[in-house]
Amino acid sequence: MSGTCVPGSRGIPKMIRHVTYFSLMKKPILWVLLLMVTGTAAQQAKFGVTAGYLNARGSIKAEGISISASESGFYGGLLADFTLGETWHVQPELLYATVDGGEALFLPIVLRYYVAPKLNFQAGPQFVFSLEDVPEDFTGVEFDLAGGIGFDITEDFFAQARYSFQLNNSYTGSEDVTVRGNYLTLGLGYTF
Image 1 (cartoon, rainbow, N blue to C red):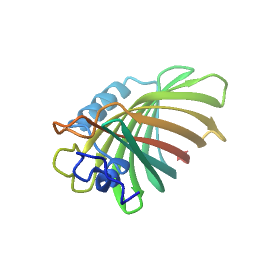
Image 2: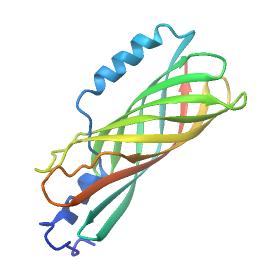
Image 3: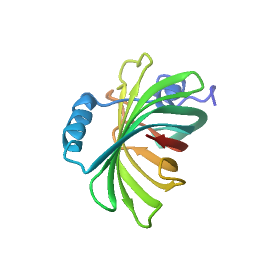
């Protein structure tokens, strides 16, 4: 694939690494602070750690041609779990992620709804912040939509799977090019 070049794209395939490995939003800390302030009204708060497998898929569309690549890596980080009611929780996370040498910070803020005592569905926004140099005409911030499922193995130990897809375009230049990333995470977590 490294030899493939989209006509008029000025070497965009060289940048698929940056697509696959993340981009970002401008003021994610405000989201976290807002969530933390909101969380003070929550009935119960728990904190914990989570880690697991990460699959990152980047895609580029230009002049009717699509190119995509997928790589695997891992993630790990911290989480907070705010109980809002018997079946509702809010779970912000701050995760370090690495795929094939690329690094980023993920900030998912998911709403969890328990459909059974140990089984929950998850959905919410996710911000991805690149920790690498971002090429000209690209943004280092992604705004994603995430959804998934979680299972509480014990009161403190859980497993979760999530898929997210990027809503914004990482390419900010003037050409008709779309660059996006999607992420699959499979992990375990522990709250205390």
